[in-house]
Amino acid sequence: MKRRHFISNTALGTTVATVLGSCTNNAIQKNNHDISLPFVHWKMQTSWPRSLDTIFGGAQTICDRVNAMSGGKFVITPYASGEIVPGLEVLDAVQQGTVECGHSSSYYYIGKNSTLGFGTSMPFGFNAQQQNAWLYHGGGLEAMNRVYSDFNIISFPAGNTGAQMGGWYKQEVNTVSDLKGLKMRIPGLGGQVMSRLGVNVQVLPGGEIFLALDTGAIDAAEWIGPYDDQKLGLNKAASYYYYPGWWELGATLDLQINKEAWRKLPKEYQYILKAASIEANSNMLSKYDAQNRIALQSLLKEGTILVPYSKEIMQAARIESFALYEENANKNKMFREVYESWNKFREEISQWNRINELSYGNFISEIQM
Image 1 (cartoon, rainbow, N blue to C red):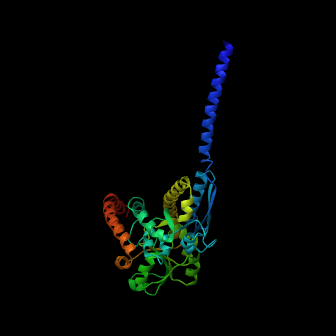
Image 2 (image 1 turned 30 degrees about the horizontal axis):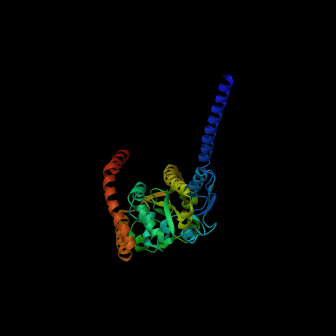
Image 3 (image 1 turned 120 degrees about the horizontal axis):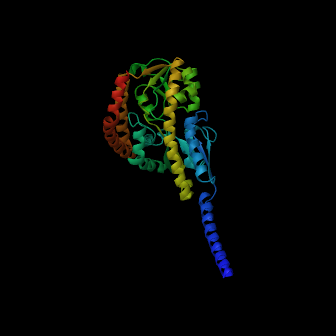
């Protein structure tokens, strides 16, 4: 009897151990993110110097999260501007497969297709939240990836700077005539609008702006906002700090991925990469707002002169912006398709935000003045 009881218990114990062992192995396999998944190592070229820790940090966030979520099996190494290719040639490097992915701004490449401007920011367009709403839930990302498809690229939003400042000037600019002949670093469609107002537009990567402004090679320059501008030392090269940056009210940065490299990724890695991009997009915006509030006060204490753009300049810039959109739409079918849906979304979300946000913002501004 006891012997039979012992044998039964032994058999039961063996069965339980087998089941638990199987469960444990499955758990280990899951914790190791499926041991059948391959090791993948990518290079990411960025448009940013490492010294700009928030914008370069967006690229770093993606790489860190991908590594962590894949259990170290999917590794992406980020490279600063110029380490593989110059900062304004990221799209070309991704398209050609020199690197598997890049972190850049789509509007750097409007010379290839003006429609790429929508992926970053349009003059008098969306703020950061509106831009995200359009990209994620208004058909914007699908539209941009139709454009990127011509360059063998798929993209995801991977950072946002929030509303930017209007740039540093060595002298005051109060009227449109004050802008004529001014040499200014400003890229994208904002640069094209400024050109229509008489500005001699220059496009320079972030790491070259200070020297050009300090030596007088340019008279004015915009970058992002107080935190990064102070890091670049732009306040040491010019005194007048203008606002708002009407051309970049919510500038999105892109994760640009070579399509062949993307197709080769296991689905699990694709999902991980998408999730990491969303985190980078959200985190960068929050971080910039937190840092800019402190950096602005520091700049003012150091003697920076804060100046709003005049109503004359703002009105002229707005008129030229929408005139430019119509011209591009008449020349570029793809631009027209994106512009029409973008503009409809802009009108509708602006109406909503006037009710739910602007009314409150106006009230608070009045009582705090």
